Figure 1: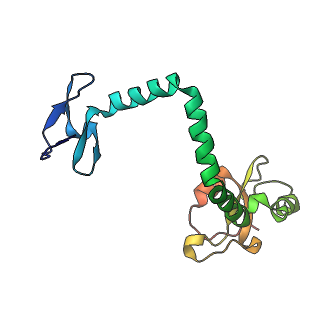
Figure 2: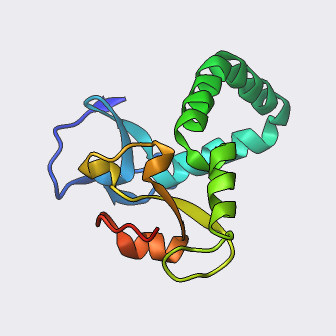
Length: 147
């Protein structure tokens, strides 16, 4: 890799495609630029992946094994916080007839925090109301209790 004093307007020629491109078209590692542009780098990686499917499976398997505990922990935390994954959420939706409290639409409901988390609300079910995605998006971070 070559060390180049970077200027915003400058560029260099890709060693694979031979096209002169600005520096932002190249990956950087610290103060070094890779010899080929991002587009050629991506194509080179895809070509290698197609040529070595067994190595790709091994790499994915090794990654999965290494990060399994972390992934499981994230899942447990999400499940603990996400009301849609609890029996209480399904009971709450049933209590309101599985309809959006704002517009009355039936269909996929999402949990809405009456008092938004950014304004001090909690994940507690007493702060949750079922709304359709559209009504939840319109409500934004306002404090509106449709119950």
